[in-house]
Amino acid sequence: MAKSGVVAVLDLGTSKIACFIAHINNAGKITVLGIGHQVSQGIKAGIVIDVKKAEVSILAAINAAEKMAGETIEQAIINVSGSSIDSNIISVETSTSGHEVTDRDVNLIIRKGYEHHSVEEGEIIHCMPIDYAIDEIRGIRDPRGMLGSTLSTELHIITASSTTVHNLTNCLARCELQVEDYVTTPNVSAEACLTEDEKNLGVICLDIGAGNTSIALYSNGNCIYVDSIPVGGGHVTRDIAKGFSISIESAERIKTLYGTVIHTPGDDREVIDIPLSDMQADIPNDVSVGLDDKFISKSFLTSIIRPRMEEILELAKKNLESSSFYNIAGPRVVITGGASQLQGVKELAGQIFNKHVRIGTPADLEGMPDSIKGPAFSACVGMLLYAASKYDISSNMVSQANNISKKTVIGRMVKWFKDNF
Image (cartoon, rainbow, N blue to C red):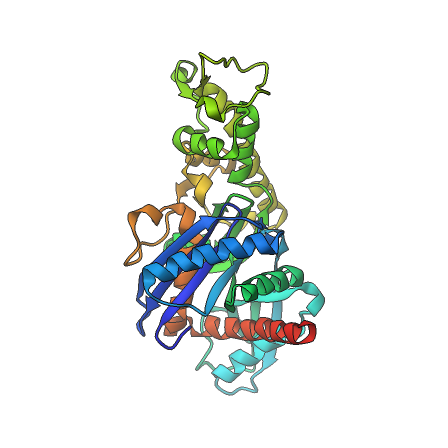
C-alpha cells in the first residue's frame, strides 16, 4: 500500500474487469475514491488467454478509476480464481520449552508450514492458522502470552498454479502495474458478504461469476476450504443466446431484465420482445418467431435458465460433499456474484442444499455509488477489506502469515522476471 494510504484493487473476471481505488486511514476506514469497470477480454475463468486483449481491458478500467479518483496508481491487489486454486490443511508443531509463547514462536510455526510445501504444488497465496493448541489444550485463538511445552496449529494453505500467477504478473507488468498482493476470489468475496455469526456457526459462500463459481466454507470463524467449479452465469447467457438465436449482448440483457428460475402459471402468456436486429436466421424449430411476431414466452426463457442454474448449484454441492467438510458447514448458504441476482435463485438453492439461503451483498463502503453496491462487485469490496485488515491489530497473526506468503510469491516473481527478461 502506498504511504499516502491509497490502495488499488483489480478484479480480473470473465465478463468484466473492475478497478477500485480507495483511501484507507490508520484506523482501517475505507473511502472509495474511484471506480472503473470494463468488459473483460483476454481473460477466461481466471486465466489469461490473450495477453494483448487483456492488457487493453485492464488499462481501460484502470484509466477510468484513476480519472475519477484523481490518483495515479503503480500497484494493485489482484484476485486469482478458477481451477488453478488448491486448498489444503496441514498440521505443524514446534517446541516452546515451557516459555511464554511470543510472536517469534507464531512466525516460526507458520514458516514450518512452508517447509511442507514444494514449488511444484504452486504459489502460496494464503497461509491462515485455523486454531492453535498448547500441549493438549486445543481451540486456542491467540496463543501469545500462554505457557506450554509444545505449540501446534492447523494451517489452511491456499495455492494457485505457478503458470497462472506468472501470466497474470506478466500481463500487469505490460500495463506498467506492479502486483502488491495476490488474493483468492473465494476468500475475498466471502469476507465482503458474510457476518461474523455466520462464520462462527458455519456457512457456505458461493460467488457465481461469469466463468466459474467460487466456493468458500467457514467454520468456527475460520475459512477451512475453498475451491471453484468451471461453470457460471456466462454459461446461462450463452444458453439463452443459442436457444433464441440472438447475440450474446442481447442474451445478457434478456437474462438481466427477465431472467428467473421459477415457473409461474402466467409465464406462458407473458412474452418477451426481441428486437428484429438481434435475431438470426437459424432459430430453433420449436420457437415460433416470425418477422411480424418477434416474441418469446417467458416460460421458454425459464426452461433454458433453470437447468443451468440447477447444474451450477448441484456441482457446488457435490464438490463440497467430496471435500468431507460438508457435514460441518453449518445451516446456511450465502450466494453472491452477478448470477445470484436471477429471480428465484435463493429458493432453488434452498431446495438443493436443504439449508437456509440468503443473497449476499457486499459491505457498504463510503464513496460507493448505488450502481455498484450489488453482488457483482463483492470481490472488489472484499479486496479493499483485505487491505484494511492490515491495520487491524486483532488480525495481526493472520496478516503476518499472509505477509510471509506474499514475500514468497513476489520474490519468486521478481526472480522469474530477472531470469526471463
